[in-house]
Image (cartoon, rainbow, N blue to C red):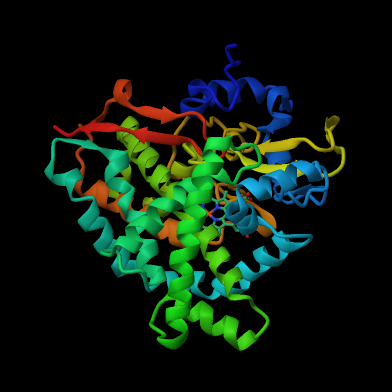
Length: 406
Ligand code: HEM
């Protein structure tokens, strides 16, 4: 059976959702996706309201709408994965709060600015092929940046086998945590969860007796001082952090390079006037978001401006759809680095707002500056050879993006 073009698992919607947005934005209707038990939402006002809605939750297990038997079966088949997500009532909220308390210190803008030199060195080293080679796969080149930045931050030596295993596990884990992930994605995520928890658990133990100047040591110290924190919660919190911070940055960076090359005038304007890069980076995120959908579950019927999301539905929130809503961002098809982006939802909204937004901005602006310094606007992306994995519900997963630099 062929899927309609607005279905999240089509190549069409994954790679080029703009025509679907244009159609939906005529009346901002919700799209029922019966095969997924889901409702997809693309209008700015509804996406913003549902990001942090009291009758919606980010945790499937705790939504109260899921069959207990099915949850028990999942816990038996994927014990580490399920345990890493939730172990009982209120755990999701407890862990989210813990993550924020423990990590907020290190993710404040002042702390992140201190990383500017490190990030700049990583970008220069990793992205060197963009200035020295004539044919490169953009995705493969830029993916190393968030991996190395995060391992440096955590204090995991990037040259060790542990680092390689740990960091490659992040994306598999992230892919398996959505409520309707396939069994095979869950199998991979279970292996990834075991790997990450094992390595991080050892790192936590090591830093207890041998503190270093890294994130894990600081988190362990705060947790020990508080006295009420299970070290495993620290481990789980950091696992989520790694999962949330690598793929999003990799995909944003790849899409940003493509958008710049597709818009040579805007690229030249940014090259000439670097003060445009800060806002231009947010415009890059609006124009091509790495996020396909944020996922919620409706715990009750939710009414919104004459439409209803039925209790028990998965609610799929399109951040990119919201960024293309012409009521809020006029002429959304125009890439304008000077656009007024107040109200942008690119990093979420409300209590779940991206914890790593300052680090993400630092990495992407550093990469954009590097591209403006070194990449000629005659470089071209080979769209016919660009490949996507449409089966990812949460991310717009580009797997390969060849670029020719002449
Ligand atoms: C350009 C890159 C990034 C984008 C576009 C992005 C976007 C987002 C969005 C939209 C959310 C909200 C999710 C929701 O409400 O369901 C989020 C949450 C989150 N992000 Fe990011 N993110 C990026 C990079 C990062 C980085 C680098 C880190 C950390 C190293 C990070 C850590 C997190 C965490 C931990 C959360 C969950 C916060 C919570 O649940 O309390 N993100 N991100």
